[in-house]
Length: 317
Ligand SMILES: Nc1ncnc2c1ncn2[C@@H]1O[C@H](COP(=O)(O)OP(=O)(O)OP(=O)(O)O)[C@@H](O)[C@H]1O
Ligand SMILES: [Mg+2]
Image 1 (cartoon, protein in one colour):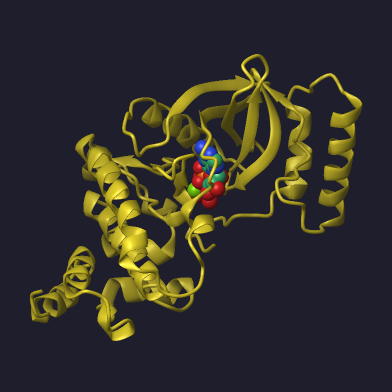
Image 2: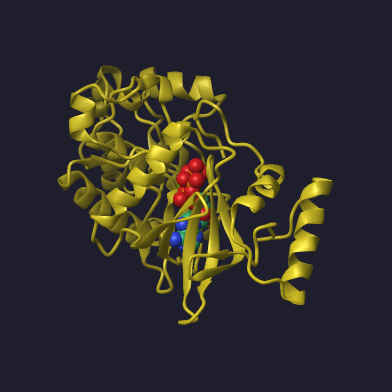
């Protein structure tokens, strides 16, 4: 997955090994020991780890035991955890102290504080936040069906009917976020989780920012973060706004409906196209796309003059 995070993602397996010492250990049962040894061996040989394998599996964090790894980001790892007494499952997001800068640590705490104040059926629920031997972690509802990138087929165009429920739920979550003076800034399929009933949960508020911070120019453009495929021109220019999240959602819908990214090329080429190239109309790729759908997607992608001109020249549905 391409990220415009200056100081890119790294393969965390080796660094995770070092992080073990920071975290409290469960009294070593034979089974836990075996799991740990085999995970450690995988990390050392650089072979692709088994799904969910991690040297941290079996560790105790707060009231939870880490069962398996669910995801890995730039400076945090997400694990399935089981509550010791309740036997319930949660997702634990652990800050990786060896990858995180001081700034990342601040963002991590901010992410928890933001989530704690959001209550919406399509936003992942924060259950707790804690620090275990210096490692901050947040506890979330567990999205048992993974993220949307994993859930939807990777190849080809998807019918409108399949994606419509996801788009509706996401639009509702984003409206709620914007009403609370926040911009998510990282709307992408990997940050949309699926609950047990296929309900969509917006997650990962790690780079969310308040509209006030943007107007007060507290947004540091040197720390531009997000995913190039979905990044609105004003976001690239260091001036994100609520419409930037809608642009990202429209770029995702575009990708789902025609089976290809809005723009192709290297990260830099993609950024330049966001800034200056009108998108190819959806119906040029998939002529069966309903005109009304094409209209609304291209309208959400209108953010600059040339695109505006193109949008105005489109026939109304
Ligand atoms: N509550 C959850 N339930 C199930 N899986 C989750 C949950 N939260 C996160 N994940 C998994 O972990 C992955 C990474 O989580 P998240 O996006 O919060 O971390 P991140 O460090 O901010 O990642 P990135 O830097 O790639 O955006 C998600 O794409 C998802 O697959
Ligand atoms: Mg993420």
